[in-house]
Image (tube, rainbow, N blue to C red; front, side, top):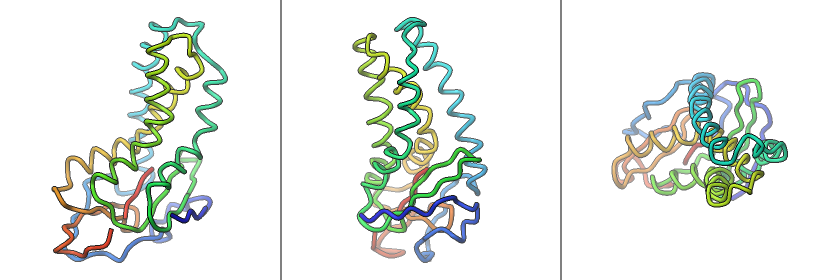
Length: 199
């Protein structure tokens, strides 16, 4: 894996590194643009944050909220993307777009469904679900609890990608990025190399 930092994403999908379109590929049913994805993901993330906060304060008490935990949840944004990038075998590119609340990596290689799902979930498990689980086991771990509560909703774009992969990709298929959208194909029908995308 070789990581390339590309800076601010312009919003133009033609500027993204992609594979050549494969004949016979099927486009994912997903938002057409980064702006649409950002709006949907942010709305769903806020909806998920509410019950997490209710549980957090019910389980740990109002004094359990941790300012260091909040700060830490922002500091792990880049490490979050690095964990995504670590799952790629070839070149991977890091972009930011703070106005749309986006920070994402993409790679033009093709991925199996299993590796794509693992790549999408890995940082959310490390920075979200594991710290939150530690807090559930021990409510005195306020920093980890706050980190988990803040980090889990931040992975909503990844959960959308996982949902799309699990519900749209047939067994044995591969996924790759073409411009902003993901496609799936059967290796024997549209090519055999392994791309993927995550937000």
